[in-house]
Amino acid sequence: QVQLVESGGGLVQAGGSLRLSCAASGRSFSNYRMGWFRQAPGKEREFVATVKWSDSTAYADSVKGRFTISRDNAKNTVYLQMNSLKSEDTAVYYCAAALPDRQYDTWGRGTQVTVSS
Image (cartoon, rainbow, N blue to C red; front, side, top):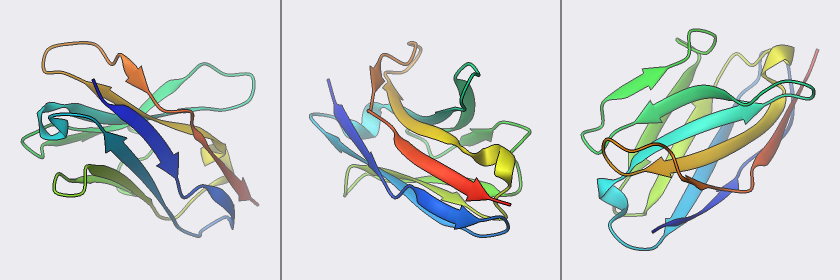
């Protein structure tokens, strides 16, 4: 099983950019489907983006065209490039991992992203 640590969160003005990183330790990182989720205050956690071992990606409609997920298997790291940030993107962002055809069952502790309007 992998362990996940997110970084890169912070405070940014609306329209700005941030890049989140998720470093994974453990075996066989390249086999995992990796995802980003977020949870805003008073709301349930929601899906943001995912990348499979094949590099195929999927995004929530709310971030499509603004966010890009990528992975570097040599560095055991997955990234979330966030552009054109909006105040509604403010949330704690979590990295998650899942084996193929399994649910996400490994989570990081999260990193706070705050977008000021």
